[in-house]
Length: 123
Image (tube, rainbow, N blue to C red; front, side):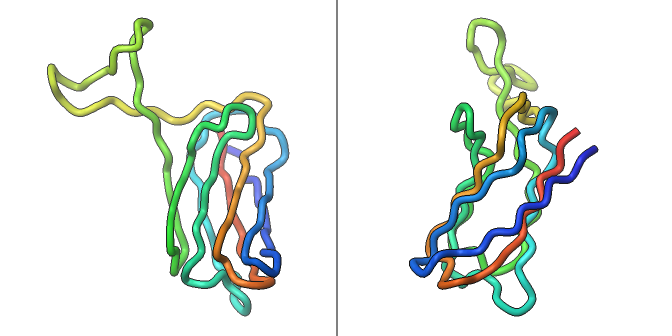
């Protein structure tokens, strides 16, 4: 497994956009760790996507503490029908696959010159 660590500093308007290096594999986790002295404001919103396709990986609003997420996506058959555990049951989910792609981290309402670190774990 590989860890990609991205430290993000917000602009005066509280926004920021940052990227991991190009990576390939199954996404296992996205973790946000607040900076000890200048963490993002409690109104910070995260939108984390695949840069190439825009596929949503993580969305959180008004984050006030560390986040540890394990994003998953619904699976389907070749015809596009959702795969279910049982007839009419819960959707089957799987890890997100990334291929020579970057993870894009967009922040809003984070406060002026605030800092946070994102860890992206891929296998």
